[in-house]
Length: 133
Image (cartoon, rainbow, N blue to C red):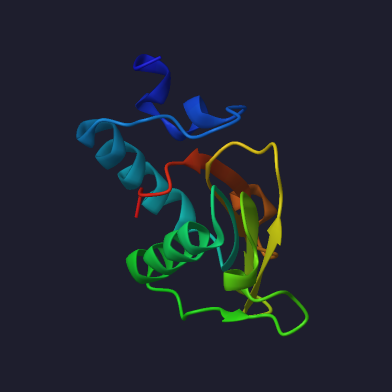
């Protein structure tokens, strides 16, 4: 498994994020930074055991990637009102995120880069560990 985690491609198809060594995380971050540089905006999905952990992972990604913080979509439930495993979906295009109860998922962060001008740059990366950023 260690060799398969030498690139972002090795994460594709995993149900949950693997534990990464510091060296693996650094290598994946360098590759991820190159990939996301070609994208104009992003969506993020966070599969977590609690809403608090999902929002924490979102906020860490926003800081690490230099994103403007997303706002909670008023149409959704307040994260603190949701018990148990969740899926958080954030969208830079709308500037909002939603959290919903979701049992049976793995854990991790999925990033999708969007580039309407160059669709070949678009991709989904992950699952990355919740503490990746």
